[in-house]
Length: 426
Image 1 (cartoon, helix red, strand yellow):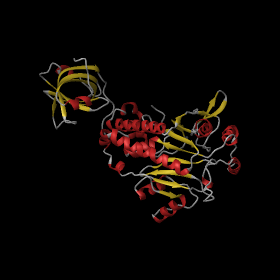
Image 2 (tube, rainbow, N blue to C red):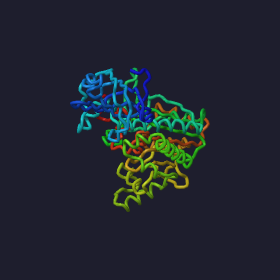
Image 3 (cartoon, rainbow, N blue to C red):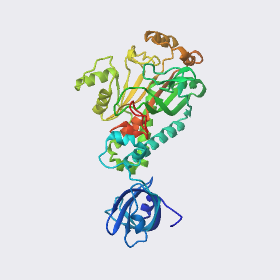
């Protein structure tokens, strides 16, 4: 066997000559005088054929699906092969002979989640995870180029940022603690030290939702910036999404082809259409929805708004009574917030942000009205007591962005091992 192996992608680019490759048996067919295998590595697939006259014939007949192998042979073009080329095998070694593989055709979604560690080998899941890697890389790189500093916060918190019952409570050495819902409280206190900060980290929401766009653990790209208003933060959010799309179109052509998607990415343009909450309510009601002013949007309404515009849509100025205590008030439109949501076609909310309320007395008043005891999070208000400045931020759900980019039926395929109310295995 040749000692120098090349990837399958490199072999396909070489097109002719002798090659040595290695990988896993993606498909196999045994005939009387030939064995066909489709070999897979992390870069591509290629068909290989072993004839009964080859010294590799005996070994080829032992092969099972997902066995790891190394092989040597001559490349030739064959339009019938999955990627247009075939290797006529002269030498073959089985490195790891696989037991009968439990994944076949027409299996239930739940079973495939039960064996997710094996299902990850599918080409479509592999493609979506490579696109996910591109998106996370772009968000890191773009924000750093804009001068943002990466600064993480703890995952164990004494109090919650969002409030409500959607928290995971746990015992922390005899004290009550919660898994983080957001990095925001810490981020706002990073502001006087670093001014422009971001983090890419897991957030946890104990929601009972079993929809195709909810996870109990998701990766959150969160941003906070000093001296920044709502319009500037919306522009930054748009740029993060547009830069992600551009990078995927450039770097993931092969993966987009495997998934059978691409056209919708080319249609997205910035700046995104922007409407107020009130305008969104009126538009929805004119188009067959039934929603009253003061109600929050559900998935159906969020997707409906984006579909009507055939683009991402930014919705601003929600009524203050349905916003969190830290959302700023729009003094030009009293009673509404300087907040915004990005809704994506077929997915709904992808990004949520706002100018933050800087008036500490207004924050305290809203807390009392909502009957929230800030308690152990009083330290959060030190960001208002000592050197308060206007600032804004957002949180972007990376899995929802990947779900939209890849046109995935379920958000569970936008993350390697999804966590849902009914799934913590594997």
